[in-house]
Structure formats: structure tokens, C-alpha cells
Amino acid sequence: MRIVVLGETGAGRSSLANTIFGEQLFKISHTLSSETRRCQAETRSVSGRSITLVDTPGFFGTHRSEEELKPEIVRCITECAPGPHAFLIVLKVVVFTDQEQAGVNKIQEYFSDDIFKYSTAVFTHGDQLPEGETIEKFVHDNRFLRDLVKKCGGRCHVVDNKYWKDKPKHEYRSNKFQVEGLLKTIDKMVTENNGGCYTNEMLLRKRANSRIFWRLLIRFAIIGIGGLLGGAVGVTGTSGFPVSFSRIAAAVGVVGAVIGGVTGYFIGRSADTPQESVVVKIEE
Image 1: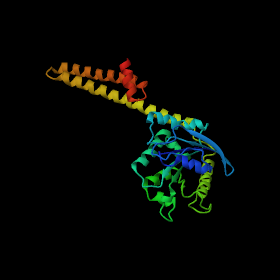
Image 2: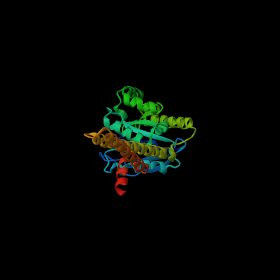
Image 3: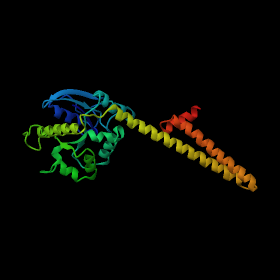
């Protein structure tokens, strides 16, 4: 079973991976910076299952730019080819802020909505749960978390990498209890997905859709600009001249709009982003 761990810097991704394996294989940072700079994959046997865990760099709080970070996070797909059976979206049991929401949005941006079919939300810092409260109750009381877990098929678990390590296995607030439940949840999810996994094709489709969107947007924008400029020429040309000349000027304006639009279309054909469209035009 191949599992990728995703989440914000400081959420406890590496600690969760260590908790699942029951040994310290992934390096933990005690600062606000992400200790994990590159994807790290480890394989162990847990409860009779061969599990490969891939730890990824955290969102935000890292010294790397997003241009450097994104390819490294996405590289987790190739680390467990042909793809992960499951993603663990790691969050803390805290008052949910815009930054936590931004982290989840980044995951969706990088991997598309397809990721939720293979995801389970896992909360760390379980000791912050109010006495007697379950993680399901905590999620239910927050609209964004409720929507996120719903996208994940209602799958969520909670651990505490510090205080729940030695609790009896039968107790809810025990890492052993929660990890066993998490693995059963993943088993069920894999069965529901007919043993399938998140593949490179899904990731490529996400990128292809993004390129198509930008190309269409570029074309329509430049066509619109051409139309506006052509119309302006026509209106300017009609001022102070006889009707017959005004009509000619207006026609010239329409031609200008068509030329501008056609030019923009061909510029946009080879551009994936607005910046690329500008570069294409300059190079021409």
C-alpha cells in the first residue's frame, strides 16, 4: 500500500509517519521551518500490510519558493509509481485559520479534485480535543472542515504524537487505536476504488486543463482588445467628416478588430500563460 503525507509546515506530517510505523524514520523539526526539504519514502510492515509512506515538504514556513516547492511535492507521485493508493491530509486540532484553509487549497490546486477520492483527513495534536469530544464532533462544528471531510468521503482520524503514544490500544485517545482505525479506513477506501490509485495521468490532465484554460483566456482577451482598438479607430474616424467617409473609417475599424483578433488567436495558440503570450509577441 502506497501512502503520501501532505500538509502545512508544522502540522506534524513527519511525526504522523513515524507514529504509523512505530519508529523514528522521518526527521522532525522543532522550529517553524519545514525539516522535510525533499520527498522521503520508507517501506515497513504494519499490522500485516506492506506500507510505503512518502513524506513531502510542508506548505508555507519553508525557505523554498513555491516554484521550487511545487515540483518537489508533485514528485511524490513518481516516488511511489504507478501512484499512491492514499493521501493523508494532515491538519492540527486548533482553531482553523485562513492559513490552514490556504494549505488545503494548495493541495487541491496541485492535484485537482481527483485527490479527494483517495484522501483521508488526519488531525494531530489530539490532546487539544475537549474532554470527551471525538474528532467527528470537532469537524462538524467547523464549516470548512466539515466540507473538506465530506469531500474525503467522511474519512477522518486523529492522533497525538506526544501524549497518546503509550495509551492502551482499546482507548479512543490512543495512537494504536487510531492508527489501526486509519489503516482499516484506507483498506476500505482502496476497495471502493477497486484497488486503483492516483496516477500520473490524473496529474497530467490537471496540467493540461490548466493550459487549455489559459490559452482560451489569452485568445479571448486579445480578440477583445483588438475589437476595442478597432472600434476606437472607427469612432475617431467619423468625427467631423461626411457620412460616406465615416462609414469607410468605421469599416477600417472593423478590419482592425479582425486583424487584432486573428493575431491574438495565433499568439495565444502557443502560450500557456499570459506572461508567455507577451514573450511570444515580443519575440515576433
